[in-house]
Length: 119
Image 1 (tube, rainbow, N blue to C red):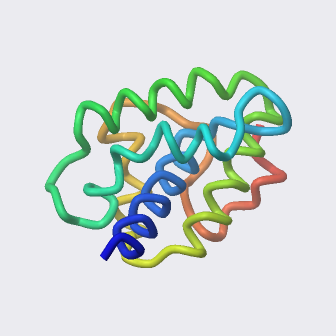
Image 2: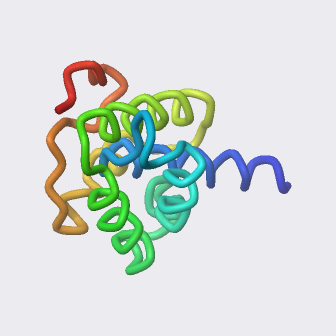
């Protein structure tokens, strides 16, 4: 049981990170992205009807931490990598997390997002 929960947790965190666009080549690490977005897993898997306060706090923190283009591109790539490795995430819910948390990010959260074009 620990494995599915861990996979969903990691997937949700990565999805949220994509949405928020944080880490890149130096300031933020993929591990930090996952940690900040972990509270979003329950929403990203459809287990709760809205992102929690902790989820939105993580999204805001990550968005603020992604101060450079490199940070945002790194965050994007980390999220894409992590979400593709995990199951149970609902792409429609993941894509909507930033707006649900009143956070604007400079790209769409999608498996087709070209992270090299994120600025």
